[in-house]
Length: 429
Image (cartoon, rainbow, N blue to C red; front, side, top):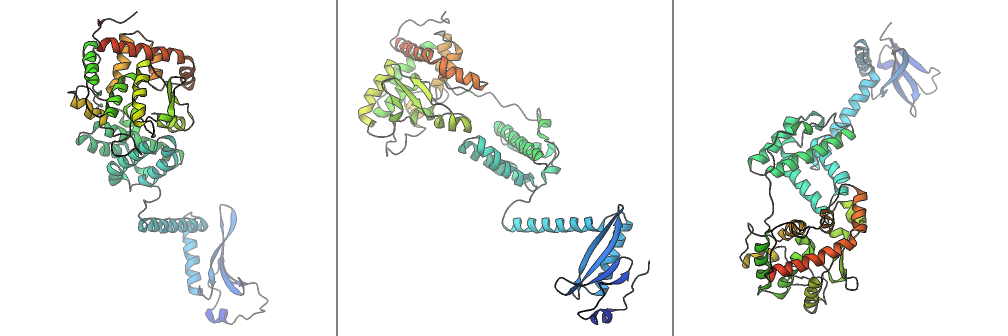
């Protein structure tokens, strides 16, 4: 087909308003559409692709000269000869330019590139992780990613990352001796990849390929005493404590309430039901997932006679405030997490001998082995999660009477040990 039918720019400049022509053809699909867009002339290129007739806009005259319009038409013809739709090529180029502009803007703002591992990880953290776990848990996860993953793989497209890339990050953590942290980092990366797959940002999650690639986490148990004779010595040591009366009360209640150290020191007077002889700890304070913290039932702690006696002795000291165990310097916050541990140390029990958390292990082991209490009842009182929602509901409703009996039996047993009663080395029937 003939080309270059328009003699030159003089011909185009001579076109006046009112010209009856609708277009001026330059041949082979290129033409000038007259008086469009408020009186300007628009270059158009008609072509066929895939059996369909299409039109490509090439700019307006005189901003786009005749020579430039011909160059653009020739580029479109080359794409057609190569089997590419010029309209699709333009859209792709526009998208790439837009993406490059967004990437540059994000870089100036200090933000990770879209589609990078860091960008996807931060989106997962904000949209998914923060909604599922506690604020402190989420904060630890983000710090772990920022310190041990983002510096090496954060800027890389998540779709291009392999299992070896994640393994290299985890192995750096292993090399500094933090094996458990390395496993947690690997697991967090796996969750990011799963999110990426769900959002069509990557094809697969490579982390399961690393199942056996890291050293196992060494078994670690917080020190606890579970031999009856040694427990008896510990109880007598607690009774002899000569420090602050508030700390002494915390020491006396530690073996009686089955609570985690953080739960114990945050206890509030408003949670005590004197009539029902129990403490109702709000779900938000318990070690649960975020949903259970928000909507779960309070944790019910029956109070044995011995625990009530300690509380009645403590009430004149701190009962006017919020916390059972306020800090020594202010009653606006609870005592330090190190208070009970430091008191144990003063009594001669180091971290390798007995910890504040060890009182739970003591109760879990000895209530089973020495008193023969069903494990399900003990686990319910320890507020350990069970596998399903029906199990959790059953523990809360069916074990209440059993748990009240457990707490009194346990307190009586501790009294006998402290007083030097005969210690039976076998499991009760």
